[in-house]
Image 1 (spheres, rainbow, N blue to C red):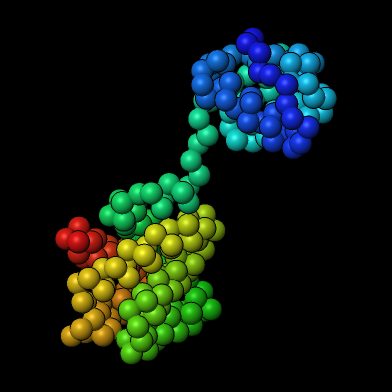
Image 2 (cartoon, rainbow, N blue to C red):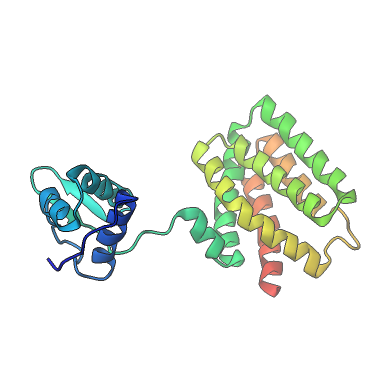
Length: 230
């Protein structure tokens, strides 16, 4: 192993992490390589074994290293995987919206089958709030629109779907506010899309899964088409 050089006194763990990470990302330790043991690394870096152990734990948490019991620690990746929220922020809003459409169409179907009395109250309230937001700013209207869609997703009673929708919201909100502002969608119709959203709510309330799915798909694909025009 090439010399890593002694480390400054503080902060030792952070410095150890940075040095070991460079060995991985610069290709000195390719994927599949077993890295030197704690004692060797501690001597090379001029730190205690506990510092090396903590640095290895940090790199394992980042997805770069993995310990194999009785064998040692191996490099399993040379780049830190981008987290999901960061990936969504970097993605094109149309790509995000395509996935949103797939997700929400199924959520609408599930909501129609699983909605409770509490969900029906929440859906009615969300639709009324969306209508009331017609007198507000574009951002307020978009927030009310997203809240209605969230109410449909929540009514599906699938916590994974609910969490996933939550991850999408920041990117969706930004794209929708831009869409409403740039295309002036509310100039002639302050409560743009009311009929489509009312149809979606009616289908969920009626327990009609196929109609709910169709209503969600029609409304979301209409918005997606407008986003592609931007």
